[in-house]
Every structure is written in C-alpha cells, then in structure tokens.
Image 1 (tube, helix red, strand yellow):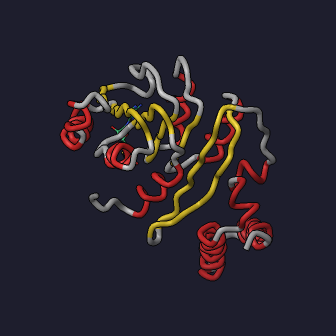
Image 2 (cartoon, protein in one colour; image 1 turned 90 degrees about the vertical axis):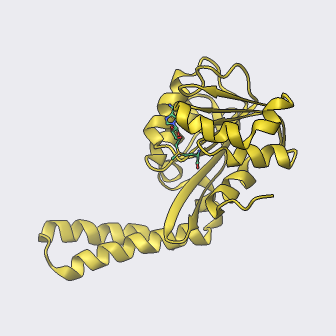
Image 3 (cartoon, rainbow, N blue to C red; image 1 turned 90 degrees about the horizontal axis):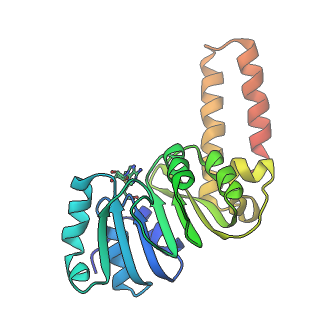
Length: 216
Ligand SMILES: C[S@@+](CC[C@H](N)C(=O)[O-])C[C@H]1O[C@@H](n2cnc3c(N)ncnc32)[C@H](O)[C@@H]1O
C-alpha cells in the first residue's frame, strides 16, 4: 500500500467504518483509495469541483471504478452526490466547507472535516445543522497545525471555549494543542519584546497571554 502523508493518515484514522464513503474535494484521491484498500468502506464516491483534479483520482481509482466499488463525479459540494453515509471534506477553508454543508439537500450521518481556517464558524454550523461533535482536536505535521472534527447526527451544544478551541483539546489537553497555544503565546511575547506597538496593544496582548496560559 502506498505511503500517504502524516496529515492524510491522521484524517484517514478519524474516518469511521462506513457503508458509502464520499470524499468531497478529493483531489488526488488517496483517502478514498485507502478507505477501499482497507475495507473501511463498502463503496466510495470521490468528487471534486474541478474536472482536472478529479481526473487524478479517477486514474488512481480506476480498478475500483471498473469493479463498481467507486464512482467519480465532478460536483460542487454534495450537488451530484446521490447518497452517502459518511463524508470527508478536508483541506478546504472553513467558510467553503460551511457553504458546501448549507447548500446540501441532504447530509450524511457522519462527517469528518479538516478545515484549513475558520474552525470556530464550522463548529457553530455543525451544531445548527444537527450534528453532535464526537471528536475535535488539533494535530500537527511538522510546524503546521490542523484541526480535525468528527461528528454524527445528533443534538449538541458547545460552550464558547469549545467553539474556540475544540472539545477534545480541552478535555485531553493533547500535546499538539498545547504546542499550538505555546506558539501563539511566544508570538505575542516576540511582538511585545520588539517594542514597536502602542501601550494599548501591549496591554491587550498581555491580557491575551494571561488568558491563553491557562491552557498550557
Ligand atoms: C487543497 S485540496 C484538498 C484535497 C484533499 N481533500 C486533501 O485534504 O488533501 C482542495 C480540493 O477541493 C476542491 N474543491 C474546492 N471547492 C470545492 C467544492 N465546492 N466542491 C468540491 N470540491 C471543491 C478543489 O478543487 C481541490 O481539489
């Protein structure tokens, strides 16, 4: 089995065993390939808004397509996805993910999301759309930090802290999360040390450092 990157491995590990898996914005198609190779899903739909991107996945997955175990579609979000029980949307901005979710006529039972930014907005939207967040944590690949959310249909509510930091990060204080917060604190400290900011900004940064320090 071909090696996939650490980020893709983390994402793959977060996906539950499912009947019909949909990879929205699949690009290369590696996650779908691994889902099928490992038997973690029975069937897969891989889709991308770009025909050129989809072509890469179609080549990679052609054996599965021939066996009728996978189907590739050019689709804006869920537009052309007839049915799936679990969907992955990874590597897209949070606002794009929200748009995709809100435009969908129907959404799957479970979702795995890896937004590149605006994670807070994604969390709020998931609750509005009737999802329960089961895992929400930070991981890193080298110096880059990522957020990963796994949710299923169900009732839920989030505290302000959970919206900002992610539920699992708060309960488990994972090392990547602590390191991400430490990095933010150090960035503020560096700016303060450079002495190029107003006293008002400095005060705000010191307060923010104090607020963040309770998470490390
Ligand atoms: C940065 S790539 C991420 C690929 C892969 N999911 C990953 O995490 O490595 C983002 C992909 O999403 C696709 N995309 C962007 N907006 C989309 C939309 N509304 N519906 C489907 N695909 C979309 C892009 O064409 C691109 O191939």
